[in-house]
Amino acid sequence: MSLYASFIAYQNYTADPVSFCFFSGYWNPHTFNYTKMSVKKVAVVTGANKGLGYCIVKKLCDKYNGKVYLTSRDEQRGRKACDELKKMGLDPFFHQLDVTNKESVNNFVKHIRQENEEVEILINNAAILFLKDAPEPKNFQAEQTISINFTALVDFTEAILPFMKNGGKIVNITSSSGHLCRIPSEELRNKFQSENLTVEELKTLVNSYVEDVQQDKEIVKGWGDSPYVVSKVAVNAYTFILHRRLTPKGITVNCVHPGYVMSDMTRGGGSITPDDAANVPVQLALTPCGAGLYVWHSGKAVPWDGPDPRVYIDGRT
Image (tube, rainbow, N blue to C red; front, top):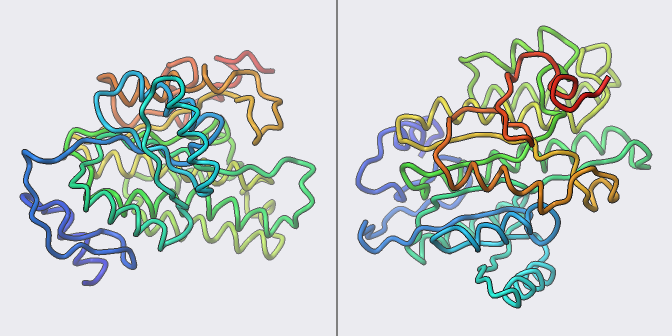
């Protein structure tokens, strides 16, 4: 099936939302006896063996009336995290998931299908950050950051969409770095916020950033000097594309900046604990809310293309 045909099929599915997969190259369940009455609803959190993802799973296990998947790339660490939560009286389910690995994504999608489950909540949390003193070459940092933070998030989400429950919730964990003002070029900002932007066009745009870094042209082209910024701006752009596409199915899509979180990623240098940072993402996943929003750690929705919220909310100068 061509990508276009897959898209048309996805846009028009009715009785059998799991008979195909939107993204070319991912597992495609051709036939499946799908019975609405027997479907089990689940929540899925990526990158959840520690830090923010772990705390999101903990709160979902306590508050969500359904099965909660704690997923992580490292199976040993993921199972250990689940065991810790079970000792607290909670009941998470572990499944290995490396969102950058096509086989791993396929295995997870097959598992959801075989369990006759429907994803009601998807929280995309898996991400990396190279700090300022990271020794890796900048072209490597750009490639890895875009691949994990953006491309893998998109590909996994598209692979899981046929299993999303109508009326479900998608929450993309982003950052203050994802605010549009962090991109210096007005031309690039206009491209990112175009209401006609497609997923493939967004991927092409972001890949052009990686190429510009390889040619040492990212500054002169107006991208700025941070791969993390570009990756999170791209995640926000994808959030709004999904919002426009999935609104007819009643699927709510939002992105949230959880704050500067104390974590391994920030070497413990954050200003908010992972447990506190998990509150707003979980609230967006469990309670009625608006859609197509960029939400700050305070719970306030902010304009993506407006003034820098770090100034008027966080008080930075």
